[in-house]
Image 1 (cartoon, helix red, strand yellow):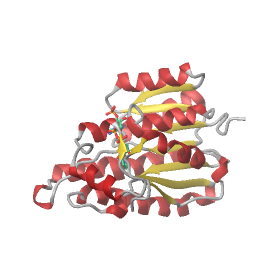
Image 2: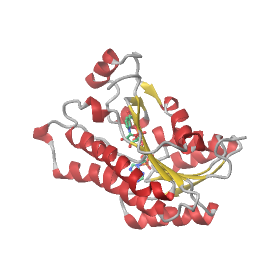
Image 3: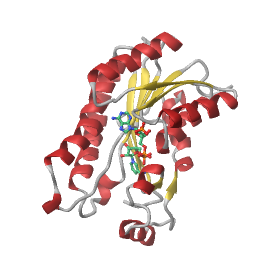
Amino acid sequence: MSKLANQVAVVTGASKGIGAGIAKALAAEGASVVVNYASSKAGADKVVADITAAGGKAIAVQGDVSKQADITNLFAETKKAYGRLDILVNNAGVYAFAPLDQITEESFHTQFNLNVLGLLLTTKEAATYFGPEGGSVINISSAITSLKPPASSIYTATKASVDAITVILSRELGPRKIRVNSINPGLIATEGTQTTGVLGSDFETGFVATNPLGRVGQVEDLNPAAVFLASSDSKYLTGEIINISGGSR
Ligand code: NAP
């Protein structure tokens, strides 16, 4: 029996990268998946096509999850398509790196508005849709909260906020059987780390040199943990922050 049969999942930022991988993994275990994206319609449609071709169920829903109106619409569309909500993966996020003298207000607000405020507003909305049997919220934070490399003040601060929020909301939502956990990836090869130049930078070289398993992670390295946290296999687990970083900490 599939681990997520009859379950409905929303994965934010699932048109590429980590979100796309997790969306496909949840669908492969039987979940109906809402593939959210901000601008890459073609990417989201491809993820939906891959899921459907493999015998799964998915729809794509556009929405900027740093904006309340788009978040409201995302869950309304989910309810319309599948009638319920069981799993939320708060994956959508942005990262930009700059030393102190190059920090800008704009970069602060862009990263905090999506990575922190967006995650809170999305979880708030989802909490109104989870049924009496509860649900599972999986936040995608980052192992960067323990690595704390130079030139990452804003991004690391957003994810440190996410780590705090994971524990706080596990306490708030536990009585409703809504579990809140976090996956904190190390450096993962994605479209995002490619286009922002993180891959190929000194940061990658340093990460690999000190990584106990000696490599950058792949999206697929995260999927089993996402399925575990989404499923009842983890039913007595909440408020946990799981580093998946090849041992980098
Ligand atoms: P990515 O390849 O850049 O993909 C980002 C995804 O988020 C895309 O689907 C994008 O949609 C979506 N997105 C961006 N802004 C959005 C918004 N306002 N509303 C809704 N969706 C939005 O990123 P990634 O590397 O997979 O990272 C995904 C998550 O993992 C982020 O939270 C990141 O901080 C975290 N993380 C990544 C790494 C890593 O090394 N890659 C490590 C640790 C943690 P569009 O394509 O439509 O814009």
